[in-house]
Every structure is written in structure tokens, then in C-alpha cells.
Length: 419
Image (tube, rainbow, N blue to C red):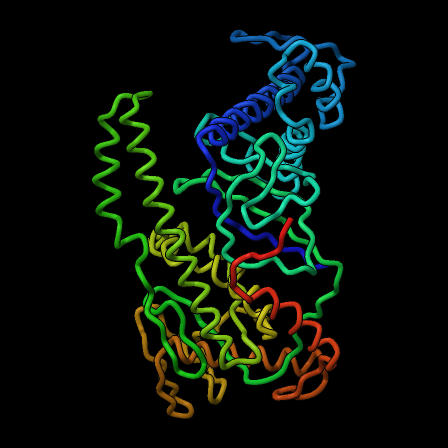
């Protein structure tokens, strides 16, 4: 099963914009009420049995069940008899809000995420249509429940192989977008080790250095617009809370932040495709960039977006381009000679790797990239039991299927299918 999410820009009318904002408001109220109900249940179980709280007391029957998704979904149906506003929004849409809250509580326990927070008008930015109408896509736009036909900028054609499972409306600083969840009942094989191997070492002086000797400077996406953000945020400090001027200035600041994020993401995709042009295998270090983001150079680490590039964008581009992607142990990659394997101990200030055993002298980042490439090849040889450089394990039928699928995906043209 192949699942993807594509994003398209919407061009709604004024009445559709007001309907979207009203729907967001109702979803926000349901989220906040359901979260308040769960917090009250938890607080009622925290009071000691031999003392009462001086501040407040949560009194609830001992046999009251925890308000999980099923309990709250049942209560939501009963609440529609007393709150007519809930009837104006699609029932499945409100159920998705409760599912999202339930998922947030599960992530808090399993993934150690923070406690779910209440949402104000600015933080409530999306809602989901879990089921789509029949013949909902056409050249003019997309037909959605409650909104009707909404114009869409079809930047690329949706292949006939995929089915649209659900749609999410997202409000961003630059407008409204629809995120379509696409699904195809096919099994796309993972790329097998083949072709030319490349090791990549990421950093801050150079965004990345390859084992072939290529080094790419780090673009300063945030630093280039930091002065403008500083001036706008200084003006925002003096605006009265709740005023229209403060709201306009907040939207302008959000547009600058979105411009930074979009520019960074676009550059990451172009860099990933550039690396895949001449490689059959790409190896990177297995690093936790969240630790680097908490250090002295945290701002520059987040500005570079190293985690987004190595953990999200580069693996996806390698998957589409039939390039093998692998991670290797990051321990000591900059302290090892790539030619003889000797230990070359040096601190971070030393940018040249000089080996006293074999006399090799190379830039530190390129030497580390060559060590990463060698480690990746050793892992492949140990797993497969043979030297697979230049040998493709994937069968010809699998290659043809993958090329057919992603050949259709990469075609960027106007959508011409009639609803």
C-alpha cells in the first residue's frame, strides 16, 4: 500500500472563507470542551483522601468512567439536542477532532510528548473531511461538504492509480490549502544497494560534504530575514492586545516565517535531487539533531534544518529516485583516517584531517564523509554477503513497476480529468 499527501492552494470565495472560519471555531470549541472534561477527571483523582485542597476541589463520582473517545463521541451526539451549533458541522468532522485529542493523549504516554493544550483562534488551523463526495474533483476545483465547489490551483495531475481517501483544510499565513491523502493498492519495493556509493557529512560551516569532495555552503534562511522579523516583532510589542492592527501585524510576521520555511524546504528538495543524480547509494550519519539544537549553536542548527533534510526529505527523494538510503553509526567518523583507518584525534576547531600513519591530508568534513561511505559499504557487504557495488538486486519487473508509478507522480501538468 502506497500512501502520500499532496498539497494544493485553494481560492475560496468570501462566503466560503467565512464558512471555513466558522467550522474552525466549532472544532476548536469541541476540542477545548473535551480536553477540559479529561483534565477535570484527572484532577478529581489527584486529591488526597484525608485532606481537601485549599484552592479548589474537583468532585466527581468514583464510578465515573474516564472520558475516552467512545464516551465523548456518545456525549457529543447527545449534546447536539441542546447545542444547535453542533448540527451545522459535519458529524464525522467533529469525531475526527475527538480522535485527534485521543491520539494526543496516547502520544503523551508512549512518545513522551507534552500534555495537550487548549486552543485559541490562532492555534486552531485545520479540520478534516474523512469521507469525500462522489465525483468531487474537476477542472474547476474540488467539491467539499458544506463548502460546495472550491477553486483549486492544480499544480500537478493526480494519477489514475491513486484514490483520494480524505481531505484536510489548512489555514496558513499565505491563504488556505487542501491536503489530499492519496492511496494506491500497490507494493512499491524499496531500493536495493546498487550503483555509486556516496557518504554525506552534514554540518554548519558547510551544509554537507560528500565523499566525492563536493562541499555545499549553508544558506542562512533565517538570518537573512532576521532583521525584518526583529523590527516587526518590536512593533508588535507596542500594539494593544485584541486590536485589528495587532492582528494585521501578526499575520505579516507569520507570512515572513512561512517564507523562510518554504524557501528552506524548496532548497532541501533541490539539493536532495542533485545528490541523487550521480548516486546509487547514499549513506548518512545516524544523529539526533534535537541535542544539537539545544546547544550554543542551536539557532544555526534549526536554521539549516538538518533533521528535516536527513530524516524526511532525503529519504523520500531517494525512494522516488530508486536510490538506496542508509544510516551508519556516527561515533568517531571525524576521528578516523579514511585511507588507513588509523585513529586521528582532534577537537572541533581543527578543520584539516592529518594522518601521521599514512600522511593523508584532507578537509575534515570530506574525510568524515569518506569514513561514512566506507562504513555504509561494509554494512551492505555484511548483510548481503557480497560486494554489491554496481550490482542491482531488484528484479526487472519491480523496477518497471516503480518507474511507472513515480514517472506518473513526477509529471507536473494541469489537471484535466473531468468530474
